Amino acid sequence: MIRLRALDPQDADALLLGQDDALAREISGGRWDRAALVAFLDRCSRWSSDGPIREYAAVDGMASGGDEHQDGDGVGGGRLLGGGGLNRLAPGVQRGHAAMTYWVLPAHRGKGLGQEIASALVDCARGDQRISQLVLFIAPHNDPSRAVARNIGAAPTGTPERHPADPARVVDRWVLDLR
Image (cartoon, rainbow, N blue to C red; front, side, top):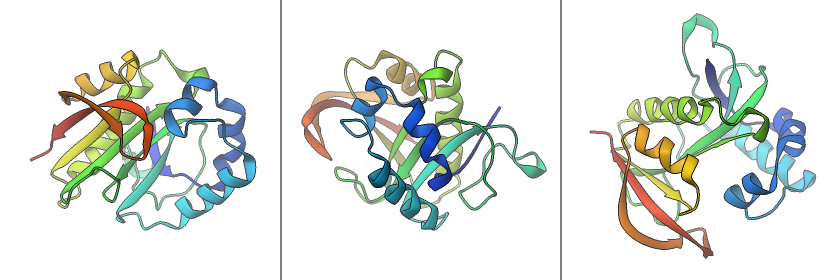
């Protein structure tokens, strides 16, 4: 069982030690450097739990009170397994939609955690009345991510496009209607 909490600077070591080329390529195009990663995680930790940009750490264990996830304002802790985000202000995303990302650290892949993380993020998005559709930008060769997207009910639009945040990358747009 996983729970979500806000990414924050305490996650830097696990991310730096756990990253591999595949994760770095999908998330940022290259391996993280400590200073830039810590600065990004510091910003994440200060974002509002209901704000337009939310980045989550997926950790093992249950949140207090039996909730499967927390919206970023819970206590830290737990072993970092992966994470994801909901971004209502992303390039290529229109009003009422949010870009959803999910990732799993290499040591924890192949255990169904991508599905758990994506499902928890969908639950978070369903709880936000401002989000009517999730948009996923998935590399055509990323079969595990495509399987996760399909399993949560997302469907490809069928037209490859340039990644809105990185025009050098080609991705498939997938959508999941929430309402």
